[in-house]
Length: 464
Image 1 (tube, helix red, strand yellow):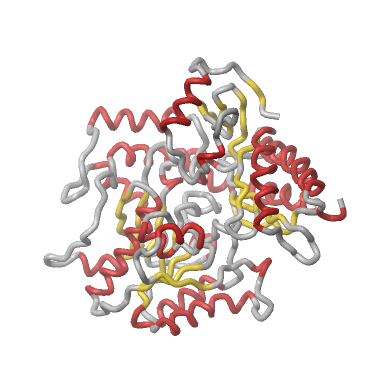
Image 2 (cartoon, one colour; image 1 turned 120 degrees about the vertical axis):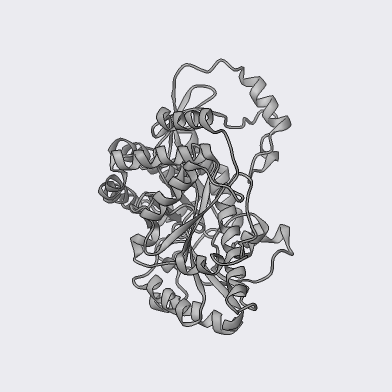
């Protein structure tokens, strides 16, 4: 059960009334919050835990949205932003610079792999992906390949919600309401080896990228964009050698390789950048979320010297920007956030605790509804099935009943925030703050096991 501390003083009825009337929640069925159904209102955070307006405590098993990597309540990180505001509240990076952006760009370049030395700041992840798509198009025009405009991405992958990023996003339900949008997006199979097509082997997956580039005509393909561990669909990890082969294919056809690390950077997989976990060198990294641990909104596109080179001479310019990209306060917060990483050796902590987290999740495989456990670092998913032997999944109607009719609310009631999602087959995703440890794994198991056992009974899985 969620534990209860003293309730906050703001009247619950006032907050609920104002939220229902005025606040448009993101990716939310607003009709779900009619009279008598409360909107969860989170008012406080500390470490791996948050509290709602009633004083109930919850473990934040999703790091809010894969982003509060250092945990909640770090006063020194917030103070860094306040101190910066006293010195320089804001100035733009459009033709100007300020010390915090310069210093942070240099610091990130020092952490990024290979020759990824140029940092273009944004306000968030979709903006970083949008920037990368625009950059690769302009890069190819400037290097004599004006027809290279298409982006190859993977099915079910999520790369953002802006119209350009939706070109790469491979989730039909997110694309359909907004079509038509920027043309040029095309998709290949993802690395869900749990549900690999019968005619394929894991080593065939990278070759589908080559086949797609050839089908589209290499002279029209600008870039391939992939997450190190694919979020949507449930934490798909790559087969051995997958990314190395994709890198070879990109080089073969003069196609740029974008590693979308909005989630997978800043320690989520036990490295500063997810591409380091899997040993491949991209041309561009897109990042956000953990760059500030969400203490301030920020993202970035990190590019290689090769990609930046055409823009460094004469009158050339990347004709793109955002007002708040590289905001001084966000940069100061990011510095303080990275100081925590270094001071507390968070990358080492993730590597040490990953086997314990994975072991706890694997121990749930004896529950009939648990089909697969997959992921890396502090980023894992449990796929739910009707039959473990056949891997039969649930219908759309059954998934609705399972995820929204029971699992989400029950895990929250018991004090665990995570994601029950069916953008693909139904999964539970877990992405705790990087400071989590034994206490949190025990709490998670104490919620997940009884809830999944009851879900098996409710859905009549395993003869229950």
